[in-house]
Image (cartoon, rainbow, N blue to C red; front, side):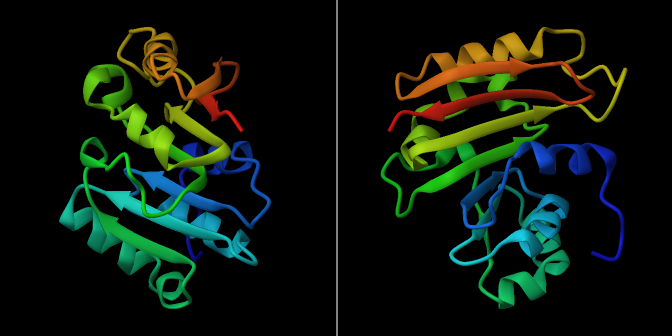
Length: 177
């Protein structure tokens, strides 16, 4: 980590409440800054799968995190989250995204049922929005309520919460055990 991460990434890392052994899926992971911050925190079976729909984004994630990829801590996948299969090859303890707007702009395309299927029992989904105070996150819409409604529409997700008490909006859900 030769450079400091942007403030919004630095703020969300502690809010992921990592133990270091989680299997993690980051949605919209380009340019790989969050992966670069999380990778060194991993131990044991800890692993990050970085998903991005853009070939350029995937290349940037790999370039930034090549040592973590080579060490087997990070897998980079080029795929749009709207096309994820509901029959996952693996399950994740944590799925997160920063400023991925499909959850409030096109909720039917957000593929929340497939995301829930990708979560292990007791797994956590964390969605973060905003770059800092007064950034206009959500362009004046009630982003948190819109995202929460998208998550609540999925029967497999429980404990949907909105935390707008800091510079970064967080919408969270869990998968029942």
